[in-house]
Amino acid sequence: MTNRISGEHPFVPRVINPVKIERAVIFAADSQIRGSGKALAEKMAWVETYVLPDPESVMETSSAKPTAFLFDDAGLALVDAGRVRSGNRNAVLVLLSYQPFIQCAPPQAAAEKYPYTVKADLVFAVDRNALLPETIVLAAVRAAEDRLNIEKHSGLKRFIFHVVDDEPRWFSQFLPVLYEIIGQRADVMITRTYEESLEFLFGEREDHSETCCRIPGERGQGDDVVCLITDIFFPRGGELQGDAGRDLIRLVNSRYPRIPVIIASKTDEALEMSGLGFVLPKGDPGSLEKLREYILRFTGMGDFFLFGEDGRELRRARTLREIYTLLLEAEQETQEGRRLRSALEAYGEKDKFSTWLYMHGYQELGDRLRPKRSQGRELIALLKSHLRDEISRMERTPLEIAGAKVFTLSELLEALQGFTPGVLQPYSDNDILSSWLDHKGYPEVAEELRPLHGSGEALKDSITGIVAKWKDFYRARGEA
Image (cartoon, rainbow, N blue to C red; front, side):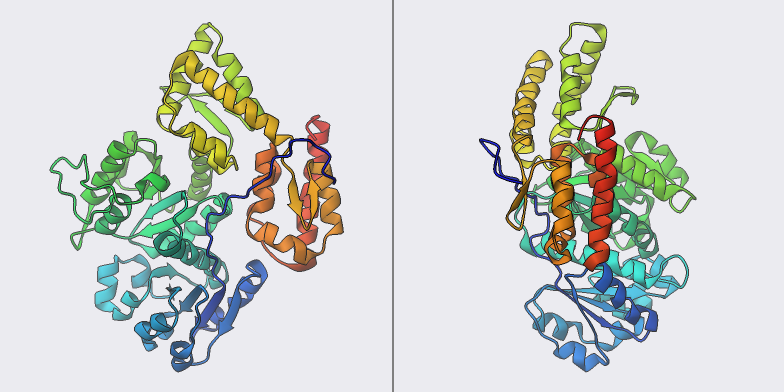
């Protein structure tokens, strides 16, 4: 673990959320929600958790620290949200609702029957069976952090999963799965109406185009979206409409054809739109596993998949080196080489190289390739040149932990065994270990570490055990 490699290239972790939620304030009549603070303490050790006894203590709390306020139905009904926000400028108010109507209703209908719901920035569903508070609270705090950074604090290049659904029960069900997949590589933004969605994507609250093929103004954040997950039926103009999802999908396909679309619906209307996106039958057995598979294949989160015009998988690569090998094949003057070049050209036009590179820790390389528009052999030569340089740098890119530099998986295991849990904590919390492992060409171990959170010796033992297992695996393949 010494600085023994000349021309060392520093590893710069990508930070998606420069502002972290530091405090969670819980005010709830329900004992299970009050007890969910234990899950936060265990899984999000960096968050200070407070369970307050009465509404006045909630409204009197004041802090500049980013704070998620977590309420049940009774708790939110009792507080003055304006006072909470005035004393906490980085506050996000979250409702964890047991009310079946709120869980399945559009926001306007919920507000008419339960006016306190308008106080919340985010609404999640909880129950005593599948949607346990100790599970949902983890996704709720992360969603609050994402929203805070997207809306107030980050001018950085972002990567956002945009979720459009008016029913809190459904996105409460799948967000824990989504966060396990994406780790700290992307954020999630939830919108619940057509107008909210237009404003977020395009910077406009109204669609002025008769054909719904264009939105005036480009002040939204559509350029940062890496996947759209949307229902078909959600409010538009205050009414539940099937045209809302159809028109939104067509707008995204027209303005941002690179964005993969997941249509989360079991309706006949969704099946009719299967040519515009991947139809995910909402709530069906196995639907969350299908969601995971699609995200890993089409958003740059998993292996690099090259698909032909007919949608058939042509090649699959796990690492930068394997993509380079694919390029060598694509430059051959053969029928297969020409077919691969054609598919790669389509990927270049839709920024799919950059998206994969961003998701796997190659920020600088993604930035260099994104504005390039080349074709044929020129494209292959350009990609080869940049990838060759990056592969060379990978060998000289150490992970530095408490002054120690590690260059290989074996050195990482040795270092992990010697560090205290407190030293390792931020490297796990902020996805730094996984990002470096992705960057070095160890995607499998990175993926297993990515959803891992905790603290103390248990966290250290988990990390060390996973790295040891995969070190033996890679050694057997001659890659360690």
